[in-house]
Picture 1 (cartoon, rainbow, N blue to C red):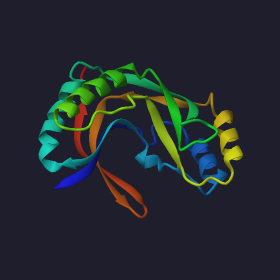
Picture 2 (cartoon, rainbow, N blue to C red):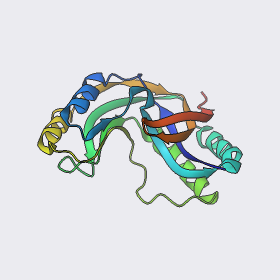
Picture 3 (cartoon, rainbow, N blue to C red):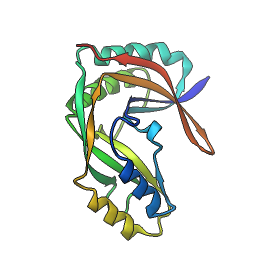
Length: 185
């Protein structure tokens, strides 16, 4: 049996982005702000994943973090993919994310060996804070992104990564932790 999966770092309420979240939610009905409890940093989206691969994924995750010590990330700046004029995703940028890039590269090599399709876009460290569909007030949204472009949202220590199951429901995705790999000092 398969489940929808991804590898991530949990953020949740460990940063102060509540003012930005409220503005995003209020700017337009087509803007769907991420729920605070689901805020995370995706290291590798896996998609439909056979449950038989969970043991291999756990081993891969453990190996990917074995030489990485806990580290501090700073959440700084707001932007959009593909750009602020036609955003599909609004994100908060990360400073100090070099260890995440190392972990992501190791995960990528390993999941490709397990049969997953290689990621074409490469790893771009960010926290997705909103998804955009059918925005009527694109100018207002672009102005909001510009106004928050230098925003500071705090920092957090990264000490683990998680294999997550994502179940899509009409109320939104439900994320469940399948495995946790801890970074060691």
